[in-house]
Image (tube, rainbow, N blue to C red):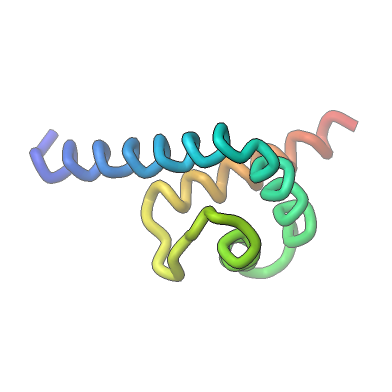
Length: 88
């Protein structure tokens, strides 16, 4: 693996760790994020809509130009909500 790739993966991990710290310090973010995801799931550009609403209503800020960590987080939210509906 090239040094650039290693640094990129390290940056992604650090971004995700920062987010996890926010969730642990404000646990209501998780429930709110899932509510937002449920609202936008299935819509065109759902990830963009979720990111915009989450950024405007919490201290989690997802820029318009999503990083790899942002994309991973948004996909995780979508998968969590899809799993909820699959269980019932």
